[in-house]
Length: 437
Ligand code: UGA
Image (cartoon, rainbow, N blue to C red):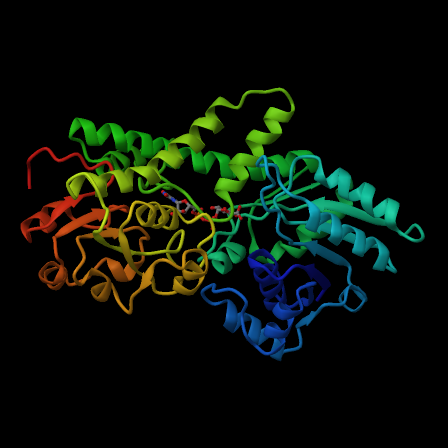
């Protein structure tokens, strides 16, 4: 059992804290947001993540997880402190480090014994060195500490499984012994450990996210070409994925990537390159294709409705940026909804868990009780988040309730031939219609 402090109760902080507690450690989670800490103390979750509430409740009941707004209390006897605060995009796409700076300063002012400070937030290359300088300059008297970068690779929606069965753990530090102590904490998860220097570890995170985003933009570009040439991108991706050098993952064409990570991290990496005099051509293209992919959906809706959506009723299924989360940050679905509203459409929408978040951003949409409720009387049905519950809808019932039987399948969830057989006009993404089926 080791004593850990986790700064920040967002996705990364809560999942890291709860999982380390579940592995038998004692974790004190600190956040300056009183509302979040009050919620957690009352046994409520500030975010939706499958399995997280049970994990937090179980470990709080076992006294392995504590919540506080007081750093001094949370740092007491801690050997390790994990910084898990947000790094939003600044005006030019650069990562905004104000929360990392505030956490480092408070740790420096509060620490009373040697500590290993581990940064899990996605931060620009060089931030580890900068964190070390901040802590050194803000300590009232010198106390030994080391900084380790341990970038996070969790995905929303499967964060707990990702923590407990990661593909790898990356640790960067100028202090090898400190990195090895952190590696020991991760021994129970039994994954390969890469120990490297601080800057390289920070870069591994950006390069990984940018590479995954590139795969998505690549297959999305292929989808546009498929559509024009009468090929089906879902089959193209399947055929490509068996090649071991390519692999099957992250090759789903759709409405583009969203969320709090990919858009922000690709932008931040491009910004880092630009500020050092480089021209990140590929990263710029990845972002451009991603924006184009969202626009495509609105263009398809316009085209299928005779040139305009003005005065039409459009039903959107799915508001979260992906399935199994209530997160609507940078959600492509909201971009589509906003654009339709701006063009004079009435937008009805349904999402299993993200409606509250979406209506805060976009009060103009009409929220519905079910997919059927959304489809009822609509001129087109746009499926934009691939929730499992949308896979097996009663499409006959939907067909009979719509004003016009049009389906725009932004995530290629349906069999085009089956829908056409039921009488729908169907458009997917990258599924060129060659007259068959
Ligand atoms: C992503 C990374 O996958 C994590 O490894 C990383 O830790 C995290 O960012 C982060 O930096 O914190 P996440 O944003 O939760 O995780 O979501 P993903 O599952 O990676 O999906 C991102 C977006 O890409 C979603 O909008 C999704 O719908 C889209 N996507 C994904 C596609 O359009 N096609 C695909 O084939 C895969």
